[in-house]
Amino acid sequence: MPEETKVFLETPAIPISGKKQANSFSASSDSPRTSSPTLGEHYSYDTIEEISNYLLSRTHIRPKIGIICGSGLGHLGETLSDATYFPYEDIPHFPLSTVVGHAGRMVLGTLNGVEVMVMQGRFHFYEGYPLTKCSMPVRVMKVCGCTHLITTNAAGGLHDSYQIGDIMIVKDHINIMGFAGNNPLQGPNDPRFGPRFPPMNRAYDPELIKIAENLANDMGIKDETHTGVYICLGGPSYETVSELRMWRMLGVDAVGMSTVHEVITARHCDLKVFAFSLITNKCITDYDSNGEANHAEVISAGAKRQDVLATFVTRMVEKINEML
Image 1 (cartoon, helix red, strand yellow):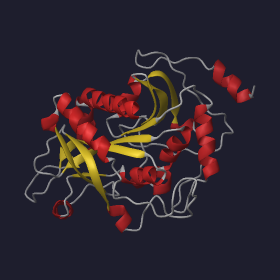
Image 2 (cartoon, rainbow, N blue to C red):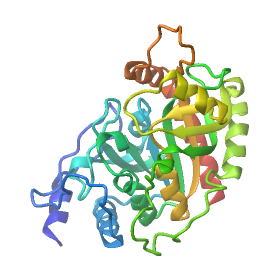
Image 3 (cartoon, one colour):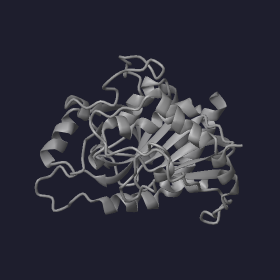
């Protein structure tokens, strides 16, 4: 038995929020770590396999659904059963999550009996990471065995009818960072991940969108749930009034700083995608407004809606599992 596996077996259990005890693992001091990110940094297929093997060798969970939790939405990871928690700093080659509201852990466990892997916190372009690094965990999910991705985010509501606490099911996106020449698929293409030029016209699975719309009706939150277009900006500064007015003219309904590069990477490796935004603030499109967007309201809105969101995601996981 390899020495590292012995350490794994002997690691004491750590209780998490009164839930069933789960092991939390630390990599050995000589575990490979990445250097500071550069725009030209890429992850080989072998590296993705190494990361996947690190995770799978420490749990019996074999996930079919990957979930990415956005700002203030990480509570879902605490609801898993038979869970194993992997801090990002302990996973070989993984970057670190630096944003408040992102716990910075990968969790493998079961959600109502369905085996899943959950990211409690993601990586953003504004943290200084290239998009290849921000979206790398999606490829890890694929190699770990996932066939579907559920990705969530906190977003500003640009559509006039959206209110704080509403859910927007994403039907399409605008990759504004791609307009500036930033795309997670730039650089050498390994066909084991996917094709050189993947289509994006059905990035968000129409069947999953329909299931989610019906689910919102069943849950009694139909009036608080919308279907719309999401735009990903580079951040970290919030948008000007003129920028928001321009996005609205282009048909944008919600504004954020994540998700799109993850979805592009997921579709490249043939994962079916479902995404939704929690509307955590109203975009300011009036020059005379004294309001200011801030991250504290994002975290607050996420905390207030965490139970509804956890139920929504759990039900979606159950529906997807029925399709597998």
